[in-house]
Amino acid sequence: MKFNPKALGLAVGTVKGLSIFFATIFTASMDGGQTLQKLNRFYWGYEVSYQGAFIGLVYGFIDGFVLAFLVGTLYNIFSKDK
Image (cartoon, rainbow, N blue to C red; front, side, top):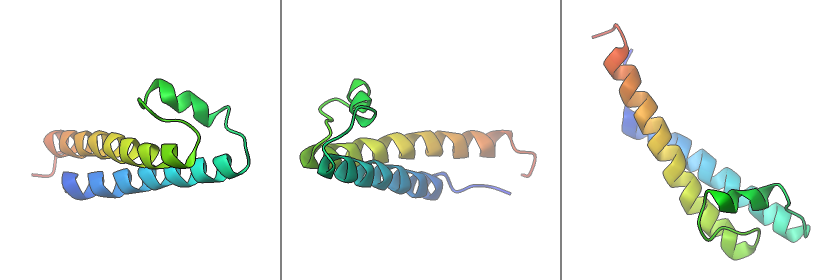
């Protein structure tokens, strides 16, 4: 079985980006966010706010896409099905 790396990247990137987006929106509406605030170490410009939710959406999508694309590509290279 072969993976389509672009499709896998789009799926994982979308889920990760939307997860960060909705978690940030929820946390910002509750005036919390000690745990999510630690994402700003990895995502430049991210903060627990409504603006930060969109920044997290973009970074989460890119991060998820690249990781899943690489995993899909490496799986295709090393899988025994040709």
